[in-house]
Image (tube, rainbow, N blue to C red; front, side):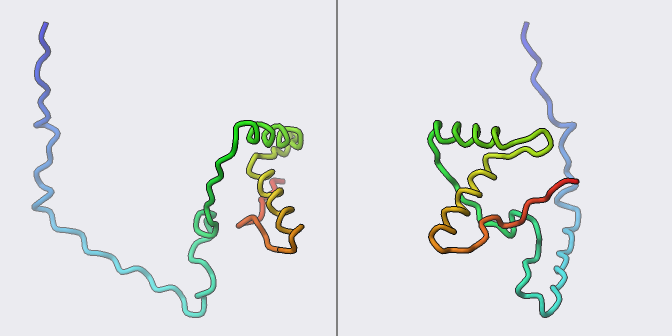
Length: 108
């Protein structure tokens, strides 16, 4: 049994070309004197993204360490273990900088 050809004519919209284009909205100017503050407080806007290529065994060991440090109410993630290790490494070499872009939020 042969299938019928699919007809998409009922899904087309021909008014697009005739509709007026929306006028561009000018963005609000930021307040003067706040040039040093970032516009957004989102993590993706205040952090620098870094890619790590780790061996399977290293990831497994980090995950086991994170699981051992976790409790029922506080889960430790792989990211937390890596950030702590990098923080310790930098402090041991005399660089007292904060590794985390934003401090951890603790739930009550």
